[in-house]
Image 1: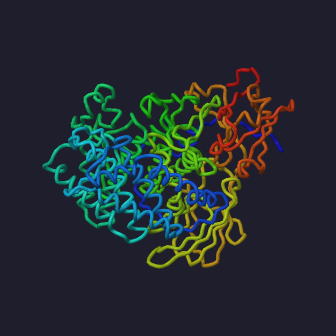
Image 2: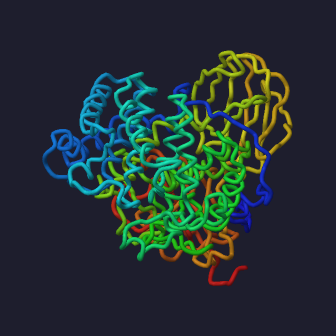
Image 3: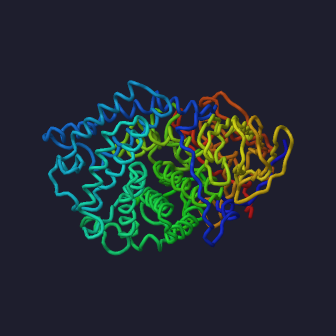
Length: 620
């Protein structure tokens, strides 16, 4: 095997090649709902099984038995008792319930559905006569709507998302009706002619768009737009202490959202804001929102994103500092923020039909988000650094447990991101083995995908019906050499915004194959990222790799990569059978890498993504 050349590109350079400073023309895509996609994938199916058998039971046990989250609803319903935990803990219950609903869509389970109904009955009982529901305020007796940073609308947003999910899964309306009552109550206080309000933690905006869709009532969409337009006009008051500690930038409240150009403040809040903006832009044609989102995407992905797709450099504000400042050991990269990157980039792809957004989605999904849960599905990362001295470990739960509950709702919905449709094409975005059947152009369409991805680059698509439109297959930016064939005969498709475009009409039974290059590649950071100067990271296809000392007791501290280093990928029997990469120098020294998502699943040990490059020589 020949040594791989060292392309001096960065993650930013990958993306910059596809970037345009001008707004892109709109190409409206509709993602195929995961309820229409049955995943049959060697990589993801075991993770979905662990989600159902381990992750959800952990969340349920923590919510019911180990913490007071469910007890808060019981106490609020009974009108007695105290509130335990943090003021936004209701949201963990809602997010876990959303994950349970998604799991029911994938795999019906009578016992899990009964547990959902039990929880929903307690939640509905805690709702106040006027429609308000928030156990913190009900049990403490504090004045409602007195502090914009106390997450009242944030909790209401997660209630709404869970309600919509459970209604779609079962057709049952109890939770949906509770969410509608809460939304209607809020709209008696806020909106045109009402009080100003700037939610300190965004979430309600995107949830209201979902509520508008499921109820077919545009008033909720209008309310979402009103809340977005409240920002940046001096209406935000986030408590006396908070106002002194954090500027308006922390809350994305410094300028109107249509004028935003730089990401700032809290990473997760930013992601939820951008999702809400994208949803409203799609529904109401807000070009100022879309223009702002293009500017923000450039700022996030070209100047403030880690190679893992993680975002948010700083623990002090759970968010952003300065451009190109990307420390590894102290990287915050909250799991929720990586999931947020998936949600936002999916929306940007749907708005534009540009594959660069799915490139980022995939990077965040396979690395920043997937690292957030252990291989056994029972322990979680809140923070995802790119280097550790061996003292950073997964936990069974957190006092602030937004990340475990976030993972519990994200994993079962990954089928959302595989396919999309438009008026003129079927779009293949992710390479996950599945069988799908959905309505396309007024008739039922079926397709089957088989693949060894992400460890292998071969993908086979078998059509279950005639395709009278284009087939557009995303070509990842990291794969410059690809082979396409139809029924075994090679073709050279045209390329458009990161997609291979197959225009010829395809018939039922036709087989389209793609072979991508998933060779180990060394990646250099942008030279403005000083923390990675003189270092290289390793990537195979969508997976970022890291080195743990447990695999490299001799060479961990001394090994240096160079242009003479031989990189070899191979299967292994460790960590559930991950592919490893062995880097071998001419002197015989080796460094063994594992996928980043799999680190800290064995004995506690130091880890690093970026490894020294060169042998004491200043290599430019």
